[in-house]
Image (cartoon, one colour):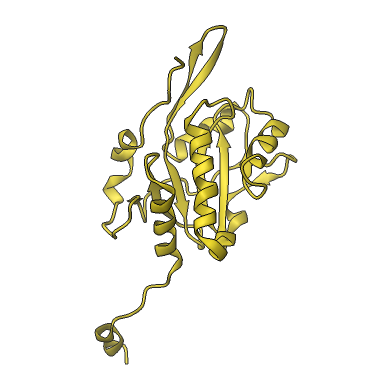
Length: 203
């Protein structure tokens, strides 16, 4: 049996919980956390890639690799279902897949891999140094693990969520269901209504 991932989502919590807020999310609310806030990687066509490219959209950001046997395809399949559950609001969602295995994950392979889940999903990559920096900035652990004559990768299994203003908001755990993820995104997408008391203060 191949070794599964990884550092679990819960193992990564000490990195982010200091800035967590209790807001009734299924995910971990990390609003204001010093994670990222952006990467300097590349799209498949060689053009520079940045989270700023998706301003106005809600971004689900996941680090993984194409030869991952279970965790990565599960996370991406969940994202497909999340988008479906959001209905018309699914158009506001952008899924970004960052490879932690640039040696094997070529641009054409990444494009084919993400397209198999949803043609709107985007994959980005960098060289070894750029990948290491992006992972460090986003508090993502990864490493090579020998497997027979080749290797697999251990990596953190969190999906980060950024709001339409490009601010990091949530860390979705791998065990969350698609429905739980969709519910969290709807909360972010729905403007908070002021109570009558608060309205009175500013009139």
